[in-house]
Length: 396
Image (cartoon, rainbow, N blue to C red; front, side, top):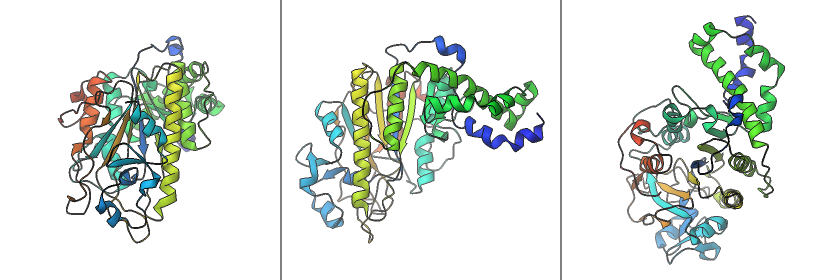
């Protein structure tokens, strides 16, 4: 195939590349080692309003600043005399009651950026607000500790910066069948039959080919390996539910994957927040509750840690459109069976003390959560992954 023809058709090819990068066929013989610790990362994309998820129902400021969108006491699931979960977060309430959930309040970073893209970038690369990093913190974990592309899998259609490392990246796919179908396409095979070492040595061309090679080799491994387990749990019909169902099948079939990433979008609730956020929280809670039940039924919950974050919270005061605008600090949920401090890790936000923009003041740097997970869960040297030294908090 001529170089010109290859480049002409590279759009199709690149969809694979960025889709997933997977397992070597030879690795199909590697069985999931029981006891491997896995991290599931879930992003509530768009900036979830944490104040309406975990509600300070005795705080007059909360109701004063949110006259039409504040969640009423009767619509809450109280966890103490001050705070209550939104009624649609029933699974989180159950996990809180059983000591399998840690809530970390006031999580953020210095000089917060309210741009969705930039703030997501900061959370996914673990960078400071004043620096731009091209590789994600999971990608850097892969650079240092990954041996196969499928050691980190993103559920979706395109690979996020979170998964991209300098020398090795994770893979992305909607499900094992789709990936295998794409990798079996005659055009895909034809392109791969025409590469040589010269192609691999070229910067862009080499990256393209190497990604395709990884995708091809990984596809068969993931497809064959994950075919041993099909979940019978009802994850609902949402796209997010389907992501978590696929994720559970990957975990419970024994893929040698240490980090998974899924996301639920739609939390950018500037207008008519009530209703929209209610529905999203139910989608999140129902799917996560089913995932936990699925993992417990297969004895994989104890070795799985689920981290949920959003790129920023919302402002304390509602806007004129019955919604909320971009804010700063937010709560983070960590779910697992081996938590050191289940329940509330720290106090709820102080609504009487806000920053100069009227936003919640961050108390815990999000990278201190990553540091703890890297060191105590993934058995990694956080110093090799995080670009700035940060003290770890004790969650696991």
